[in-house]
Image (cartoon, chains in turn orange, brown, red):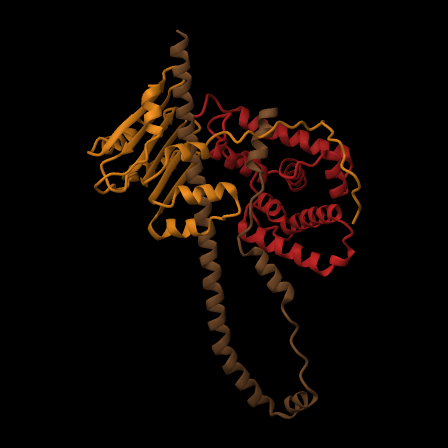
Length: 183
Length: 117
Length: 151
């Protein structure tokens, strides 16, 4: 599995053909049951507009600007539920069936029977645009990500990694810097 | 406790204002005060028949102000849309990245467990 | 800093920008009273904080979200989680005004309780009390989640 992963994270997706966005409309009805929903649909001119507003001065935004330069669309749906069993396997199957079409290949599946966590990562190498799909499901949360276009998995993964925020304590007293005047 | 504080630091880290924010502040700060009219100008205004003056003013205002107002509103709306789209894009990329990263970590963990067996 | 403080307090970019502009215009008007860089930073934080509180009082019709109304994040995670960050930011925005400001000054600006007390003209004990109670409320909300986040 390690070998498969190292091969795939070096992969820059792109080949001849056309990759379309997944149809995620069947998931919309889950909003009614979810305690929190996120729905991001950015493609065409809206994606270009968003990229235009990314700041070159902010290091993270500059990285994102470079990452999305060749994207055609980015779609994210997340649902958080108060209780388990709020969504069914058939909701996810409807997405998976689209990922069986030519061009898509599943590169990673991770499953934990202990806590019901499942994750699948798919790459589309059959289109000129390329694409990525991620399905993450646990009993209280469902996330589907679909990216259409060329994307560097290494850079994307790095943007999602731990930023290493240091610990702080309410009671800890820092050494006071010199001066400090009242206004 | 420390995890919560870490998460709070992450959630509340500084957010940048729009790129042209400084420019807008400086524009407002440096906006010149309207010039004082010359004495003869003020006299002419006082002597002009009020009705004609108000009619002329209202005609000019009814053309210029809506046009300028529409233009300003359009720009402001576009800026608001662009900033909202940017926030969504940043959020979407972070979600995608965090999921991918987590999968990667899981795979690496499994790889380490395999080599230990 | 000013924009960010206003944004985390008000959770509205448009309002935050307006407020930040007002702060900088006020600074421009009394620039000659600023004596040092440290004084400038202190002044900006103080005025921004005051305007944040004024803003919420002016917009009394703004529906106040109670902490209980904000949905709990479905899971707990140790890695950078943008969804958890967003949920936490919303939870912070649902705190009462003074505790909210104290939390933002502590975790955005990394100020010590004594510095926050000086900024907000508040006893240090009150600042610490706000912090402890706010963290308890936030922790309580998060602690009710079960399991690890989906990978």
